[in-house]
Every structure is written in structure tokens, then in C-alpha cells.
Image (cartoon, rainbow, N blue to C red; front, side):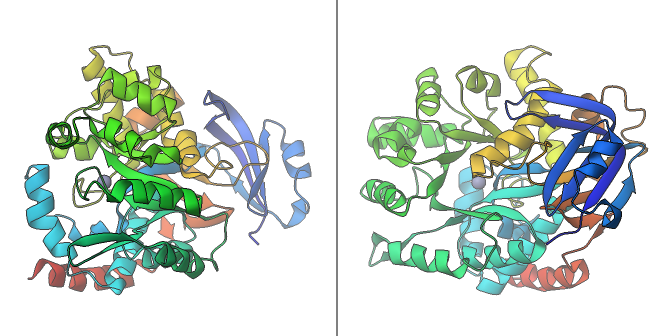
Length: 440
Ligand SMILES: [Zn+2]
């Protein structure tokens, strides 16, 4: 049980449950037992919303802005160990000749410490949850649990033997059992379907059936490069979106990362099947994958979120960079400076992201919602003078502006210190492990 907290005199910026952004000055926010009990302009009502106001921690938030923590729509946490090890390469060369061979050297402790490093970096930049895709995920689950971090975590769910792939429902059940000690409000599971290009045709319908049988969601990469689309059309006579739909992958709630090379028909399918597209601006630009047309996706009714992708292709996990770049990309793609405005970006990077992961009580600062929030120091030179708060968040703020981060009513970062992660230990562990993996 977390302590009650009372934040007074803040500028509070948050989407409502419909995605409309509201900004309040001189506002107060109360938290009781991990849940927001009040948001508004009456200090008395804020205090009265607490079971025991006299025992609450009080925070004077003059010159502070409170907003929901970011939800990272797509990541590969353990890839923090591969940071800065293979750069300036096109995706196919980067993935098949550099990343996959190194990943064969990873053991379970590497996954655990790499995940903690990634989570530490995310907390630093105001992220409170991520949708993560990697293998040996029980080690990432342990890292997230210890850090007090929300996560929607993929399990691989299949294995290869004598050149044939098999689904592994028993392994998925064991994975679910291994995380059953975690707070069920902090973790969601999903099945990994890496992409349309990594497995044989017969495996996809089996994975779809497995997800239905397990009643779980799916994470997949979709149409990240033109090469992927061309190969899919050559092999299946269909785009990746059409092929994944026909294989039944979209019959369960699905987070599709990238969606860079889509046809009008693809966007209609994604909308009809309620597939979320996690847009990854930095990764798409660095790997020269292309520019995602977010405005067309939104116009078609697709739920769009924002992700960092993994540290090996980005090379950081900084949502302030992603919201800024997403806005700039949309303006260039649409040839319209009004495209994807600051308010839309705040909603996409918070409420929409949590919604895609199944955390429907996070991402919105309202009474009854989870106390997942970040406190931004408005006196920081990069954001001062503030002007329009929504613009300040999207176009000016940097990680250094994030003073504190709270998830489920617990501070993970307080006045710039990480409280749940021993960063000196993680630094030592990840340095020796990253050298070993690189073969240095
Ligand atoms: Zn990815």
C-alpha cells in the first residue's frame, strides 16, 4: 500500500477518457492508495478526498507541471545491452548480420540486467509503462516488478526443432505462472508474432489459434520497410497487413509496430480489426525505413501510439524526442504545419498508449484512475518561459525537465533520483555484459 500524497498549486495537463486535452492552472491532485482521489481547483475538496488527510505527504507544486506518465507503445528492453554496437546500417543488414548473431549470446541474467537498464532510462524520461517484445521475458517481468514499472510483456510462445516450428502453449502457461506473483494491475501478457517475414506460412494460423485459446493479445511488427512489403507480395500475393489479417493474427487485440508502408486498403483493415499502430519516429528515420503517415491512420480511425523501439535501433528510450519527431514527421508528410498538433501528441503518448496495452485506468489524470504521473520542473531553462503548456511539453521539454515519476502511487523517481533501481549496480553489470556480447 502506497502513502497518500497531495500535490498543490500545479499546472495539470491531461487527456480525458475521450482523448481531449484539459489544462488547469493552480490545480491540486490527491492520491490515496495508488489511485487518484481528486483533481481540480479546490484545496479543501482535495484534502477531503483522502481517507486520512493529516498523514498525507504534501508537495508544493508551484512552477511544476503534472501530466500522466508516458506509455511507450513499442520497445525491446534487453536491447539496451546492444546500444551503440551496430549503427548506420540498413534494417536487413543491421538485423540479420549484426543483431541476431549477438542475441544468440544472451543469457537470462543479461535479459534481466538489460531490462533494468532500459527501464531506468524510461523512468528518467517520464515513461511509466511499455509494450515490450523480447524473448526469455520472465526475466524482463522480474525487472519490471522490482522497479515498480507497468508492462505489457510478450512471450515468445514457439520453438524450432529440426527445422520445423512448433507452438508452445505449455510454455506460455508456465510463463503466466512465473509472473503470477506480480500485481495483476502492473502486468499484461501478449503473444509475440515478430513479423510476417520471420516464420513459415503454416505457423501464423497456429499462433492465431494459440492466442485465441490463451485469450491473450498479440504484438507484431507490420510493414516497417518497403522490402518487407515487396517480399510479402511476392510470397503471399498480399501486403503484410492483408496476410496477417488472413492468418487470423488480427482476431485478438493487437499492437502492430511501425506501419510505415501502408496502402489505403491496409489502413481500412487496421481500423476495422481495431489494430493499434505504434509509431516509432526515431527508429524509422535512423534505419531509413520511411515516414509513417500518422494523420491518415488517425483519419481512418486507427488507434495510434508512440514507441521508442529498442535501443539498438534508436539508440535511446526518450519519449520527449519521439513526440517532437512524430509531430515534425507528420508536418512534412502532410505538407501541413498544422498536422498532428501538440494536444494530439500528448494524448497519443499517454492515454492511447495505455489503452493499447490494456491498462485502461492509466494515462488520464482523473479521480478513480491510477496515480501514474510525472512532475515536470517548469523552471528548467529548456522549457522556461512556458507559454502554452502543451507546446512546452511537446516541443521544448527534455528528459532533464522530469523531476519526479510516480506509478501506482509510488515514486520511482523523486527529485531526479531513481528510487527503485540501483543504477550503479546496473551500470557495472551491463558494461561487462555488453562487452562480452559484442565479443570485445
Ligand atoms: Zn521493434
